[in-house]
Image (cartoon, rainbow, N blue to C red; front, side, top):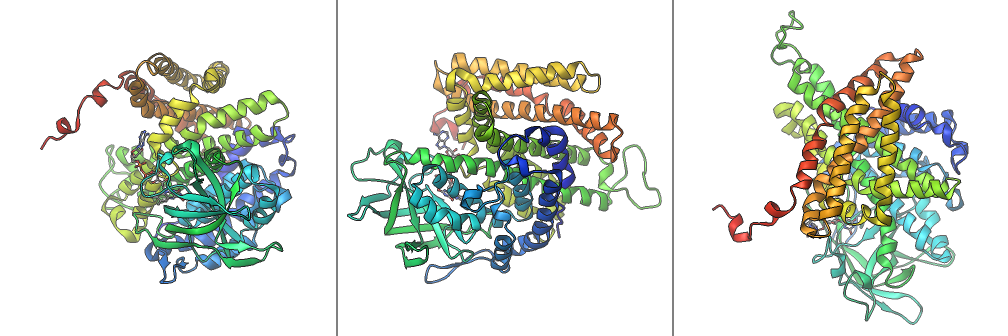
Amino acid sequence: MPKYTPPVRDTRFILDRVIGLDRYANLPGFENVSPDVVTAVLEEGGRFVSEVLFPINHSGDQEGCTRHEDGSVTTPKGFKQAYAQYVESGWGTLGAPEAVGGQGMPHVISTAFEEYMISSNMAFAMYPGLTHGAIASLLVKGSPEQQAKYVPKMVSGEWGGTMNLTEPQCGTDLGLIKTKAEPQADGSYAITGTKIFISSGEHDLTSNIIHLVLAKTPGAPDSTKGISLFVVPKFLVNDDGSLGERNAVSCGSIEHKMGIHANSTCVMNYDGAKGWLVGEEMKGLAAMFIMMNVARLGVGLQGLAVGETALQNAVQYAEDRRQGRALTGAQEPGEKADTLFVHPDVRRMLMEAKALTEGMRALCLWGALQVDLEHGAPSEEERELAGDLVGLLTPVIKGVGTDIGYKVATDAQQVYGGHGYIAEWGMEQYVRDARISMIYEGTNGVQAMDLVGRKLGQNGGRAVQALFKVVTEEVAAAKGDEKTASFAEALEKALGQMQAATLWIATHGFKNPNDAGAAAYPYMQLTGTVALGLMWLRMAKAAAEALAKGAEDAKFYEAKLVTARFYAERIMPDAGALRRKVEAGGDSIMALDPEMFRAA
Ligand SMILES: Cc1cc2nc3c(=O)[nH]c(=O)nc-3n(C[C@H](O)[C@H](O)[C@H](O)COP(=O)(O)OP(=O)(O)OC[C@H]3O[C@@H](n4cnc5c(N)ncnc54)[C@H](O)[C@@H]3O)c2cc1C
């Protein structure tokens, strides 16, 4: 069976030496973040998830959720108790504002904890994960009454939250939504329609579930412009906060799916359910986007987190399993065979996984810091820069991060050979679980289109220029230091490829939108390659400084320097090929009609 150890040392390295949390003590929420508090969160949180959530990960996958005749849903054995412990110990309240019962911790700290939680049990982590997204929407767009009524109990974990966008005929294209919202005399709306694939739509973990639902009011345009957002509780909430009558929303079925079996994916039927408008009518998509942006960063984290657990186990397996001899001659002549660890091809997979996973951890935490800066930095200029970087990097963290998570999970499975395909070893679950993160919250193709079609051109390209400036300045500084100079030169080349690809899209994309559409995916990967390159430059610099100061644990820092070199030599060169794919345009992609596609 797999094991999981929260990577506290690596998280600490990023927070303390790469990001340098102490530099942000002037930001709201950071004043309480002493090194001792960070240690307590990471170590205690890590202990909680590995002792309480990890042991029910495999069993939860095997058992799955059960829907009963009356529409109720039971989560797998142990989930209810684990959730009660999660609520009681307050882990869910880390990042929420103090005014609504949270601990007011910076986003960068709650993100570090969330990685551990997802690593130990992704299906479990989705229940509070969806709730956090719903809270974010209500805090920005909800009325003071709605906030007072719902948010504190969602923050405490007493109630759950969901997001209801998808319908049978509409997934990516939300303009096709059919769910109706009829205004009622009492100011509420009657919500009628069917939503599908709703994560955590019905379960037994919380006493109430607060659904955020997209629907159209009578006469609204039949497009995304006509969408409004509604809050629809499973149980109506009385003025004194107690639970009232059951609302007309129910789970019609749960999906039988490839992975995350322990998270209930529900068909939700709204039969004139009572709902209340959140924000303005026909501005629903903007309100839902607040939730979706939180969720997109959270889904990117899923890629990192699942990959981390898979990698940890693959490394252990490669150390334990003996097959063949090292190419350079027997390493352990007393044994009948050497371990898998001696083979360069096995190391290739492990090194790629290590470089990508640790790079993603740095990127997710830096991205989370930008969210904190966007809201709390003292100057308008800093807030604007952080907001630009968050906007630009959100589709990259989601799209590239989850592609990486799936790749790492399948490579880790590959290290196990045939045993990786067998359920009892647990690796195939990571592959299945990781797969969905590339699909939901906007498929990765849609993330790429968001990057190229929206984010790149916003404010005259201000965000991408800001990223170029950050990378250029850090490369220039690192080139002057012999320990980081060769890495900086490799990153400079990759940046040059990205700048050329950006210019190509800017000049060709408007003339032929299919060129931009065809360029989107490789451009997203190219941006990811540069963003991870920036993270590895920072990590290499921090590791070299730590070694120069004679830090303990020299092997950890030496490993960082070797992994940075691996990234520069074996991953960063992909930037050139990705640029060529961008510049190839859309002609060969779009040339075949369906008849020409068929070879048979
Ligand atoms: C397990 C699971 C949990 C989910 N949880 C939720 C949830 O909690 N709430 C919720 O509302 N939804 C949820 N979803 C739905 C999920 O977000 C959608 O499945 C996803 O957004 C894609 O929509 P679709 O399945 O209709 O695919 P489609 O939109 O039909 O897309 C099919 C393919 O076409 C591509 N495509 C479509 N349009 C375009 C375009 N304009 N440009 C380029 N490519 C395009 C897509 O990238 C995809 O590859 C969940 C789905 C699953 C499987």
